[in-house]
Image (cartoon, rainbow, N blue to C red):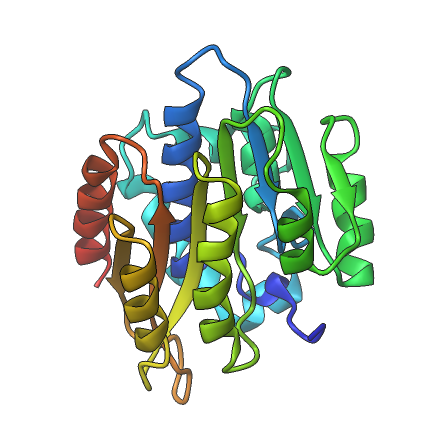
Length: 259
């Protein structure tokens, strides 16, 4: 499906949850000198303008990063990344996960990004020019299957689909164990929306059975507008890094303040 456009939702509360956790995981991984491999299956355009008409129309960034940014600790890697990238791209810029990764990773690390939507892929290629990232226009999940296991073997994969089709949930419940079997040392991070009908729950049950020790972290928030079905954000971490519970506790407190 190619109808989803993240520009309407960039910087929303789900992005705050996902990107704060992503920055924490990457910060943990880069503490060691060993190089690592970073993959994204649904990379988007990499950079968004929160003053653009689509962002203003939904008001999601105003309710999200505009409120949450100042509540994060000053030394949090996500907050520091936002400040650095806004100094470069402008005060209303919002970096997507590819640009966050490029900022936090090192020249010895490799970045591999897939985006299928033609316009988003072109924008992503422009944004990531000069970073050393490998950007391809491919189906994200097929991309992940074909590229794993990587060299270097340390690293992580972020899977962040739009979930436009109900079957996506159970497809991912089947896919993550396959990816883990191919790359048993890699951190697999799956983001999913929490909808009022609870359609994510069978996926989580299946993943917990197939991958014991998997960490699931969820935060809740009010729907952005009448009829909007998303009531929270969830992240699955396979091979969660040591000490990640400190980060999830911090985010629990942050989202309590945002209620």
